[in-house]
Image (cartoon, rainbow, N blue to C red; front, side):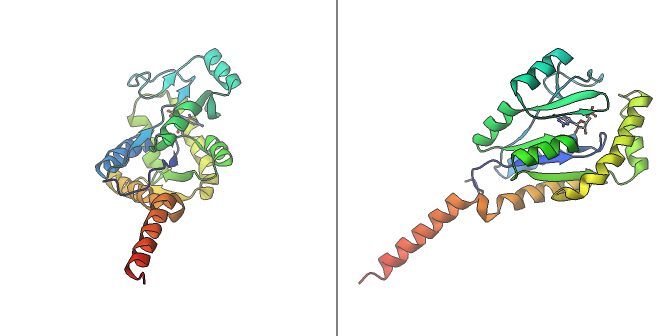
Length: 220
Ligand code: 5GP
């Protein structure tokens, strides 16, 4: 039996590139599944070329500028933003479909996009994932061996900009040890499911059944 309410929750997980949020989200989705909660990782569209280890349709939908622009014009994106020379966007249709089906959806997006989504969907839950230090983020970006040095420098510069608005997020996680960060994200998801406003239908049913039983028991 599913313990939580049926409505899907939209979670935004933002962090500087290299902050480890993709692994964090994917591991949290596995933990949620063990608790009968279905979570989907939203696969974005981007004009950035694929890194050697990336696969189209798995890490991103890699598209050219014209395709991205026509998607913008058609209103296909829930949000989109420019980040370090390339454009990134979240497909509106996929997100809406998954939420309507009662699944949680996780957006791995940067802060400009996070603000756009918050304006459109104020109930979204925003989580900012901090690297524990500059050195750790720099090491992670270099170790990945997927970006040229100038792209790494741009990502470190963007990180500082992102920290400036990270205080507006609902939750903060420091991604030092992956296991602890997964515990934190999992805990946030569970707590959000327990908000009474997200449990209306089930709570109403309990109250109604309670009242009926009471009236039956004490009927004259
Ligand atoms: P990367 O090029 O390192 O994969 O991603 C660069 C940044 O773009 C990361 O902070 C990532 O979270 C963000 N990003 C990925 N997909 C999207 C998206 O669909 N929309 C927005 N606004 N940002 C995205």
